[in-house]
Length: 136
Image 1 (spheres, rainbow, N blue to C red):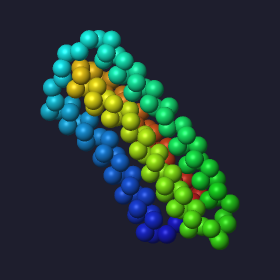
Image 2 (cartoon, helix red, strand yellow; image 1 turned 90 degrees about the vertical axis):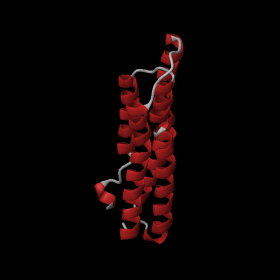
Image 3 (cartoon, rainbow, N blue to C red; image 1 turned 180 degrees about the vertical axis):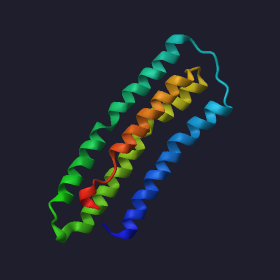
């Protein structure tokens, strides 16, 4: 892996980690929530849980990019690194949906524990997209 690309992957991971965690932390510490009906708040939490499954297509693409990188075809290696970078970036965006839905849900009365569970789901999905040691 080229050194500049290694730094890009690392910076991208930390950037998305901050993009997920900072809004949730800010809302939990500083925000006040409105009182909404229980069924509405519960439906927001269920939507956040269902958004965990929105990332299946992104993971499928990422997995196939990693498999293609493992074949060591040096003629298209730069193109494969670019494909892997794009697959990770798109999957990172979708992986943030549960955390962002949890942040919005807190504003509408979702409990803090449920928001932290959705944030944890986003962070675990983020960890799925690490570069395997075989490619480093």
